[in-house]
Image (tube, rainbow, N blue to C red):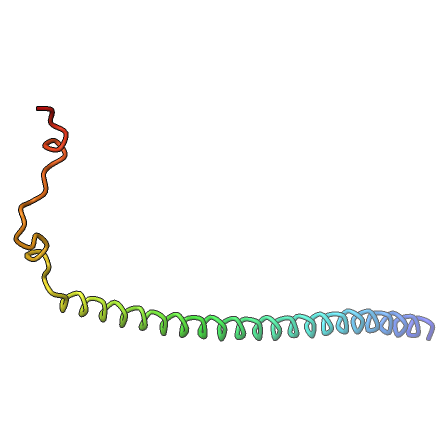
Length: 102
């Protein structure tokens, strides 16, 4: 009977240690699961922020393209002033002609 009682006590001790390790592992898993949820939420938040920034930059890019197109159109519609710059006058003398001694 004493031998059986000793075996039962050993089994109780073994089960108690196992339950303690199991409880610790479950707590660790709960913490890891919470960390994963927090990380996932943080990544979702960063993704949303990046998508918003991308959308904002795409809108700005569209505005830049529109302004560029308007500027090019405006430049094409400007009159050609190269012919009227002299206004029929003789060209100006060169720097060498201005400072020639004699």
